Image (cartoon, rainbow, N blue to C red; front, side, top):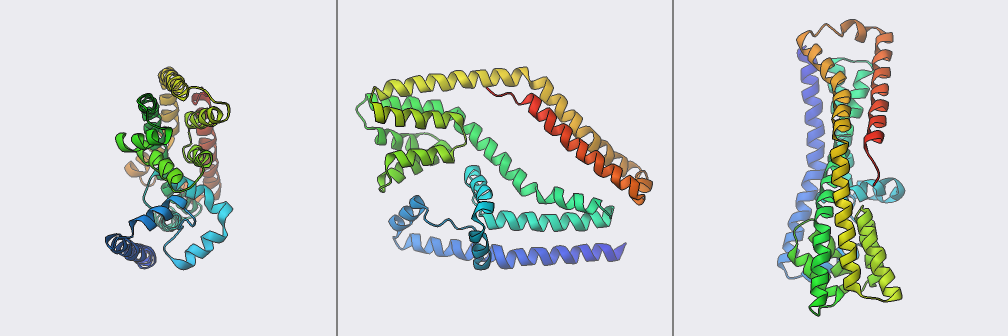
Length: 319
């Protein structure tokens, strides 16, 4: 038993050492260089570069940067997820973390169960960074949607007071908290540094994965083409978003029982299996030792995932 534990510790040490050598240390050097450049008075050049986003760094490791840059269609979903989550990281760190966690899961699976279960452990561990990013995206989007009507009201009041539309956007960036301040600040800076307002608004609609944000962009673009009272458009849009948000809360209340039932049904089998394996470690011994038992476990996991997706489709109501 001592040899597998030492092997696991050795592999873990190699993985963590490689991560520090090729990822953590270059990132620290880059951060230090960036702070020195900011201290030297080059803030304007860096703001323009961040607004234009001509070349998004995917990794601080040059070799990995070249590889990821050549796989744009594959890397782009992960890059968009990182942007929408607001997490200060790079695509390379996410992918390397998934790979390291996957290898760790395979080693743990071999030590604890062996056979095909090590593959399941590896897959389960490797999706943890993406699950965390999805959770951060969901929280950030929910917070943005809660603050969006307040931002529209602030813009409408500012324009009634005589300010321009661009100035109203800047006031939202200065007055409201994150995450809505960051998105409106980027919209304001893009327009100030030369990007056409229509393109900046379309970029805003692409960055924010909300139907209400697309409503906002469509309403502004339509008003710019056909004319009309922009403050009235913003007031109506704010009222529609608030009504939609109220309907959303009512739907969540009505579907709460189904969602809780889904969580119980999804979490009960793995929780029961974990408790039984702790109370009686030999309980799953015959099933794991038999190839047919491993096939049964794989089939159960597949059916569990299918059931979870079906329950999610039922309780997630479009509104």
